[in-house]
Length: 253
Image 1 (tube, one colour):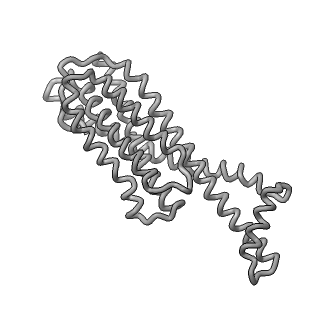
Image 2 (tube, rainbow, N blue to C red; image 1 turned 135 degrees about the horizontal axis):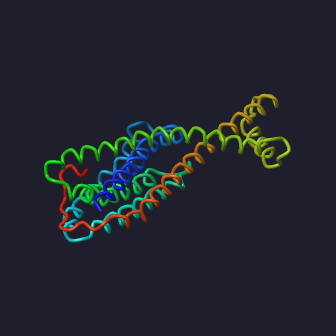
Image 3 (cartoon, helix red, strand yellow; image 1 turned 30 degrees about the vertical axis):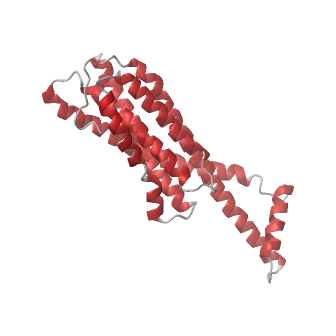
């Protein structure tokens, strides 16, 4: 049982690190580059995660001695999966509440993951080793976060290129919808311009729309990937053995 926890818990907390830090890095980037939000406003949109974490911490400390920690972790990952799933529908018409609400939910979920998972990981260790164990535990979380940010940003850039290539295949003179869009835009901006210049500017505006839409689709792909990653952790909880007389551990978050 100790060996199972020693191997599984670091992997799960590393996964949490991937999800936690990736969303923290990607969402402000989405808001600033695609939605035009200033840095302060984009920070305010993602900051409510702390509110959810504070709320959950109030309950988790009391539940740990009374409820099997596996149930708490199962609940935490289930809610976390739901919160990340909410980001898979990002588009250019969202409001701040579309970001703030899932962030509150994810913060609430993380409280049910961090503390019980740490408690189960170090519950069987001697008191003198708990400090070192929690240090390694937090190291795995930060390492997962570092790798997560690097991998997700790389996939984001590649995803944008792939989606842009697919979308531009439809932007040609043989596509009636594309030609209608060009003509509509040209007529709207062609006041005082010759037809050639108006058409050129219409093509430029459509290209900008394609680039932005490709970026949105790439973000959606990333959040789908993170959702699937959270899903994998839900059934993995059954591999843990029940810890008797569990109690909250200092440094669990």
